[in-house]
Image (cartoon, rainbow, N blue to C red):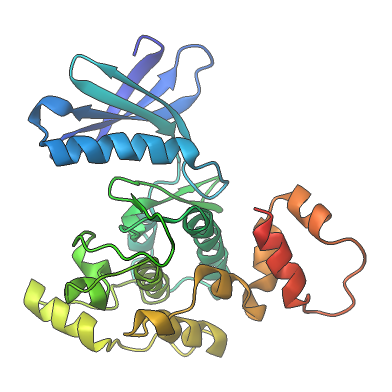
Length: 297
């Protein structure tokens, strides 16, 4: 830890603290998670080690960058990128009831989806997608997925996990009913984030966990404002299909025509150049080209 100077504590959890720090060599700001391994049960220790392994694999513009990890005297330190815009929940609360413009919602949503695609393509479930785990940088223009504390790697995309994890507001019906689940549970949670961006509140709320679970399992939510486009409102309803198999995959979402321009804008330049050469003769690029581009990232 000699390479870093701690600036201030910015968070605390049951097993550790989160600090804003800077590297002594170049003064670049970063976030350091300090995890106290002495207080931690074996399962949680394993989860931490898994997080480090998973984070090291994740290299994407819409995923919080992992810098390093080190262990000193029963403490694990995870050094990560600092996102100066805070988390998405904080940004939603700053609206004080004033709805976001659709362009802003879709810009963030596409970026979050591209980050999730990177994860799902590697047969990893995030399992805790929520507005608190999405971070903003570059004056709020860039959205990044973070906190892989309970992510799980599947040996096969058809494999189902059984553990009940996640944050109650974002739980899918299959998790609430203790049924097996796969990457479509992340799609439900993604729907919860999209709804939150449109309505500035959770889609499913209750006075107790039991009431919340009932609402989630019925899949009933108040429609978002009609000021938003039909395409956006339809997408929300598709993400909230009770049956996981009826929900679109992340690739299907990113192929939707109304998201096409934003997908292209957020793809790395080299992907766009390699995947498509020549003029675009219509407003909509062929789905095959979009898919080719998505397969390149």
